[in-house]
Amino acid sequence: MNGADTAWIIVATALVLFMTLPGLALFYGGLVRARNVLSVFMQCYAIACLMSILWFMFGYSIAFGGGTSGLWGGFDKVFLSGITTDTLSGTLPEILFFAFQMTFAIITPALIVGAYVERIGFGFVLLFSGLWMLICYAPVVHWVWGGGILADGGLFGETGVKDFAGGIVVHETAGLAALVIAAMLGPRLNKNTPPHNPGYVMIGAAMLWVGWFGFNGGSQLAADGGAAMALTVTHISAATASLTWALWEKFKYGKASLVGMVTGTIAGLASITPASGFVDPVQALIIGAVAGVLCQEACNVIRGKLKIDDTLDVFAVHGVGGIFGTIMIAAFGLGTWTAQLGSLVIVGVFTVVVTVVLVKLVSLFTPLRVDAEDETSGLDLTSHGERAYDIQS
Image 1 (cartoon, helix red, strand yellow):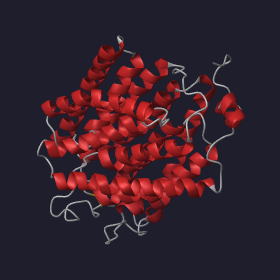
Image 2 (cartoon, helix red, strand yellow):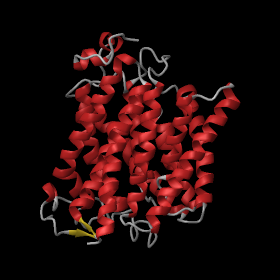
Image 3 (spheres, helix red, strand yellow):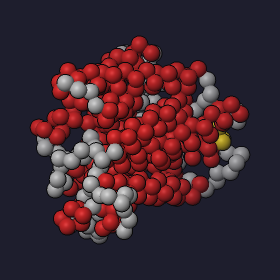
Image 4 (tube, helix red, strand yellow):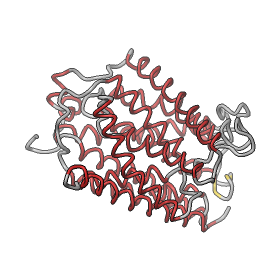
């Protein structure tokens, strides 16, 4: 065990949890109407609790167990079987590696929340999220990070896919699942409502930005120069994408909005995630500069051309950003085109198929969508019996 590495990953674990609670909750909560803000908080909080337990019970073993098939890790580490304070994973206590990876298992299904806010059944959220994490997310983790079929020595030979912190594992899977659910769920009854609290959105985005240092820097799994570089390029990409989003918005619409600028921040963060352990600061600048425009245009395509009510632009920002960053690894010559593109296709098809099947399956047991009256009244009252504010908008 290395004490410095251990200390850094303890901090990084706290930072990644901070991304979901309260970062993502505030970011998403500010974007919805006042009558639905508590429902968003509840969904994020409940997902964090449920994923923690499921990751402990089965998820960690599926992702990082000792299975030899390359498809999943098996059940040898269920309930952390055989793991003590003395068990090591590299230079870290394995119990800490478990906790660090648990925070990734929390935020990935929580990202999907943005696609279905204001109209989904709470029971569906919990049952779908739990099954999706175990059946979709955890196997993909094994494929890429657990020595599975997409890692070194797998389908793509000696050099497997390069995904440092989750462009494929986190952002592509969550983004595509969000798009599928949004399409199957259908649009909100009233789509033309502005964010009820842009201040929440900015505060949440700022928390995500800070937490992302743990997300990307912690993925080095060591306290060294690689972690410092990952942290630095993450910041540069986020700052650049914030500015290019705002500039593109100003050019197209005559004004740059706060919500737009901080959404650009998230686009830059998602885009640098897979590449953060491989690129230098100049390459990060390029990734961020393109991401701010690319993800903004993706929002317009999903909403305008495809007419899919991915309410908070999960696919356009996270999905497109993660896919773009994964491709840029090959474009910069830091990975092979075959492995990068092939892995994107394999994981993409798997995610779409699993998500469609799970939506249909879970819908048999609990309603996918609330009724029109509950949607109009708002989920805070109808699903949870609470109001966020005395005056509703």
